[in-house]
Figure 1 (cartoon, rainbow, N blue to C red):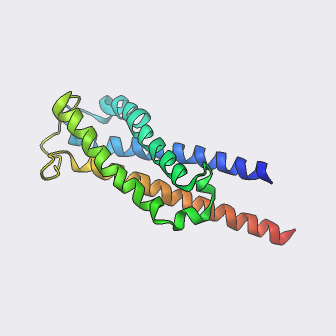
Figure 2 (figure 1 turned 90 degrees about the vertical axis):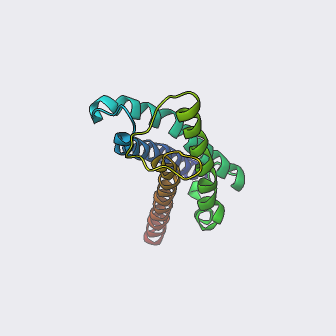
Length: 165
């Protein structure tokens, strides 16, 4: 039985990172026109791919590890009780906002890695882009929602198989 649970946990972790990557890549491409020097999606795709594969995935790994530490289990995604806890939903928000703001401040104003187009809405006081901050709130929460739905589907499937036995 432990093997089945660990396999389920392994699949959940893989799904977490795969869906995170896909959603961050999609978001990066959708917000690309809000950055200066945007010419086309084709020209910008490699930059978006790099952003999704590096910084965005590091952020998702931090969320996973912080929740694993909070629940004292690397298999927290396979435990339906994790999704009933406020920490599961609040930790990504409280981490996402400052991380996104700090990343944008450094990239835009310190190392000049990128600049905003005039169409980018800026947060008051910090003068950083709204969409990258929203990305670090919305994408992780949506991924967690998908993980919750996946866990519920697995539980219902297991209950159905158990009732047929």
